[in-house]
Image (cartoon, rainbow, N blue to C red; front, side):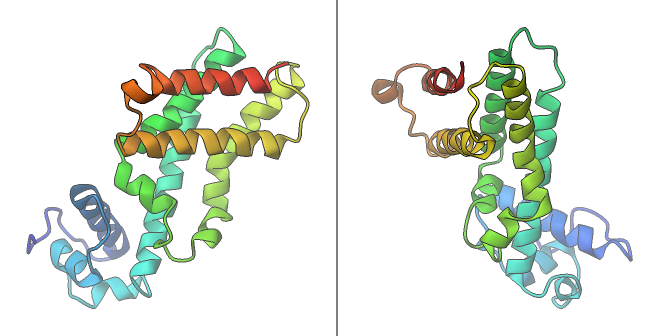
Length: 200
């Protein structure tokens, strides 16, 4: 384990330093087995320093998970900024952005939906997680209002979409979408099948 910080620590920036160091370790180790003591050592601060901002490791992991939801929302919001020829193109772009986020940051994605990040249900009902989910809700609501999608309970439709893209993301992270089992373009095929069930 590296003994000194790769980034300079400035007084008053301790919280950010601890979080960024832990995020680096999460990415490098592809897991969160590290201790707060190891994070402090890597950050070049005292062993007690993390406790000034985080009651325990679970609190730090919870903040890291919420940062993951912030990044997911930003990714989805950016994906919607383009000009789309159709609702279907927009939906597929959004779904691929979601899967792409998870597969590009697999450890963070697993943490966001794991049980180790503090009290997981509290995180998922928090404003930051709901904001990411809200991008999907807004897209579906607009499509319903334009008569593209069937008039159904919007949260039910959103849950169906989320369940599918989350499952596709986890299968992709695990390398389980094997062409010999699910075909050469399983993600696209699954998303189109979902759309066909939602569309008028």
